[in-house]
Image (cartoon, rainbow, N blue to C red; front, side, top):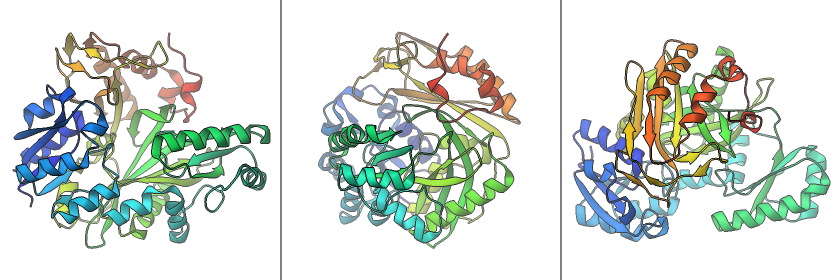
Length: 445
C-alpha cells in the first residue's frame, strides 16, 4: 500500500480523497494555487505545496510543478481526482516514468477512451450498442451534408476530443449544417486544441444513464449499478440519482452487461463510468467512458455502501476486487450546489461566503470544502458542494432532500439552492417524468 499520496486537485474532491486516505493510514500532500491557500483541503492534508498562480494553467494543469511537489514530498502515488489532469494520458505516463503510481488507468487505456472515434470503434468491436453515425472524422462540410442524409435528421456534430458540451451542435436540417460545422470546429479548436469532428444520429427524448464500473489488474470487472444524470443545463449535470426512476431490472441487467463488455474490451483497471443515452423505448447507446472518479460517485456509494475512492486506491496498489456486481439497496439523490444565480441564467457568483449553515440529520451527506469567511475564487468550476440524501424510497429521498435544502444557508453569494428547492417540488420530476431536455422548459418562480 502507498505511504504518501499527492492529490493533484482542489476543493471538495481533494478533501474527499484526504478523508479516505486518513482512514487507510496513508499520508497526504495537498497542492494548491495562490487563490486556494485558504481552502479546507490545504488545511486538512498532512503537507501542502503551493504550485503556482490562480489560473489553472499556472497550477493544477502545470505538470512540471506537480511533479516537483511529488519529488520534494517523496509522494509515491498521485490521485488526480476529476477534471484538470484526471484523464490526461501524458500526465499518467510522466508519473509512470518517474516511478510514481497514477491512481487511475494506464495511459493506453486513457487514450483508447479519450478519443471519441477510437472509443466508438472499440465499442463496436466489443458488441456494445452505439449511436448510429459515420466512421471516422468529418473531412468537409460536403461530407457532413452527405452523411446527415444517410443518418437522417436530426443529427449531432461533436468534437472528437470533446467534453462538457464543448464543440457540440444539434442540426435539424441541411440549411443549418455549414454554420454548425464551422462553429463546432472553432469551439473544439479553442477548447481542446483539436478541431476534429464526427457526426451521430441525435437521440430525441433521451435519458442520460451511466453505469459505474471497477476493474483490477487481474482482469476482474464488475459494475455497481446505474446513475441517472438527465437533469442537465447545457450538458452540465445538476442532479444525479440512483437507481434511475426509468430503470427496469431487465434494462439494468442488459446495461450492466454492456458496461462490463466495454471495460473488459480495454482490460480496464481502476474505477470508471460508462455513459449511455437511453431513448424513450429503453434502447441504449454507448456515449463515452470517463476513465476517472466522477463528481456524482457519492450516490453510488450511498446506495451500495461502497467507498469508491478506497477501492480506486486499493486497485492502484495491486489488490483484487471481488468481481461481484452490486445493485442499489436504497435510493440516493445528489444536488450540486454551485455558486451561480439560477434567476440569471446560472451566471457564476464568486465572492465571500458571509454565513454558512449546512444541513444534517438522518440520510443527509454534505461534501464541501467551503466555510463561513471562505472566498470563492473566480478561476475554477463554480461547484462549491454536493448535497446527498439517501432513503428507502425515491419519494422519501426527495422529501429528505427538500428538507435538507430548506436548512442549507449560504449567504454572501448566489447559489443553486433555490433552483433545487423548486425542482424537488416539481410534479414531473417527482414522477420521474424527465429527459435531458427537462430544463429547457423549466422556469424559476
